[in-house]
Picture 1: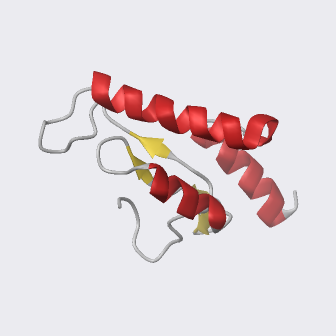
Picture 2 (picture 1 turned 60 degrees about the horizontal axis):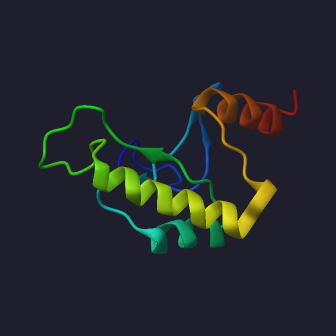
Length: 104
């Protein structure tokens, strides 16, 4: 969807030695629950991106419709996975990933 070429679309990856690429794999305006389920089935993380001010042609702005879509996704995830969900910032994911990969 967006981001670097030749890196995984569903899980973080190390770029260079310390930079962690976190894929943006769910778009507020273009994706649906089917994509969420596919990412989870493949042991990936869900990372959502949207824009406060986006041109209408992008479709992934923070609009009432897109907020309802995101709310439906969160309701699904919380209903399906309960306490197994970790809501994290990109910084928290990067720190955790670095520790796991580099065993620091």
